Image 1 (cartoon, helix red, strand yellow):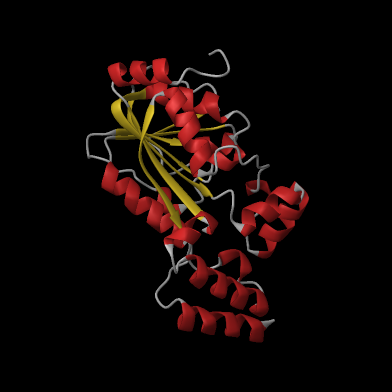
Image 2 (tube, helix red, strand yellow; image 1 turned 120 degrees about the vertical axis):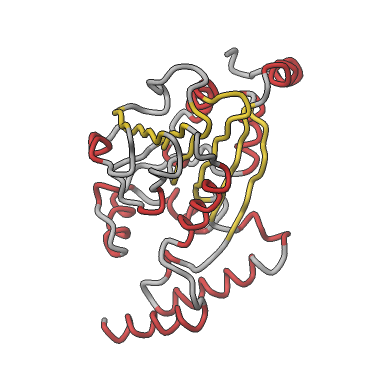
Length: 258
């Protein structure tokens, strides 16, 4: 086991020199910092217990709030204010936040349209919603959709993550097409949707799997035509002005009667 660990460390240094652990959270953090202003009031949607150090923005924004159904959110050290709540009913008034972000939350949403509608409500005009989530058409996501929660918990324990921090997944807001469709209906403008592939974190437990993951990474990053097979999806949605939102609603009416 120790020998395997040394080999994996060697492959890290050879194949991905300088790539830090949790590289995806580092990328997402940089995009959030680029988007926020010092006087912004921001919301961490699905803040949890604060185990992701990269999601620490206290001192970089005027006020950092967070919600999560997990009571441990009240102990989250990265927040100025924490509330136990879900994204389906966010306990803040209309047009309260300049920016909302969600790190690995979208894949767990059973009713993503309701959550997008709530996020839209609490954002100020031209406010931003940034979220990071696994891409629906990546092999990790497709395997996850075919396996039960117990397997996810077991696998994440091998990766050093507690079972309590592994939650059921739905993957209803995890592809560019899903995001575009729902964002248009709610009144969001899509600023960017990024698809990225990096070091194969889920395959670094075993040497043959690591090599496969490296070949896969090189392949899907070799041409933009393969971008739909990349693991990481980061979306940046902007709340439209009321006039533009009304025009889109008239052109693209909701299909659920809401």
